[in-house]
Image (cartoon, rainbow, N blue to C red; front, side, top):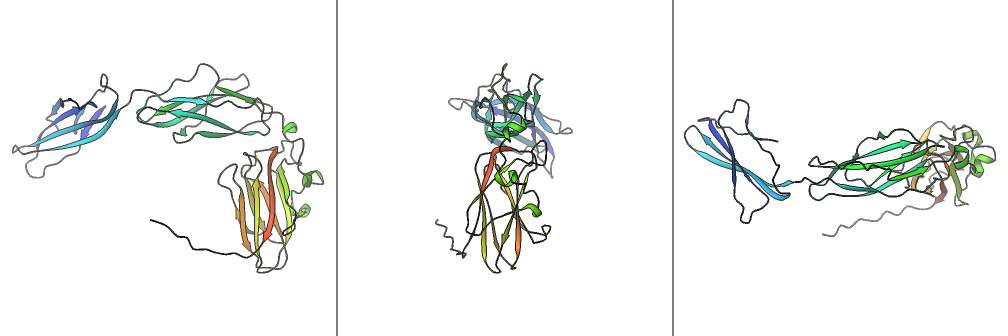
Length: 329
């Protein structure tokens, strides 16, 4: 590795730069002279090889800088670490089969010093070859897979730390699972689809204010792959009334986008989008009209399907009460 010092002397010019290293052992450790650079044409630098140095924290570099008049000063870089050990990762087991084509990979990870920089997951479909998915930030411990129905998936992974140490991929599969065929994971569309489909405003169900909840899942009866399901509901509203439209995620892969449309079924009034899979969704709106409106429900990612990928939807009214927020120091 190259150690570079950025320095200047406007009066006399730089004569030389001496580089020193101190290992992580300060008791009774000593400074180790590395090199003197007398030619700054290519930058004031030296090459340092950490091989043979012990792992640990609190190492340091220090330089002595001399100008042409013999004046000198020093500067240091402290709290450096040497990490030669790769991270350790382990994928958690998956269910043998999945109720949806979306499932969550989870894992544990640790690193002794510098911390995990990123993960790389390799995926194999059926008996195919391993392919590497895009890198995942080292702070993450899970990753959603949206797969193809009828396919078996296998996974293995490794971690790379901030010092560049890379864990070897396991020789064998760490976790595997199968996604049943689309007609299996969508054998039971919700009642609003089975009664004639509610994929358009013209076929919208009726949802009542402060009435019974509705349960909607994401199995599109109009598509052979069951994807990109939309469920529409009509709601009669009263001017100046406050409405709270609430979608509760009934399973981890559920993520419902709530869109509110005008009576024409085209003009968007308001929309609420969940941050990630498994989140509930709330849309708050004060009516500015006395006429029906439409609620469209769709998944955050239209590819996700399954009987269990469902949400419980309700509409409530009431008065808003805004309370102050007190921050205690």
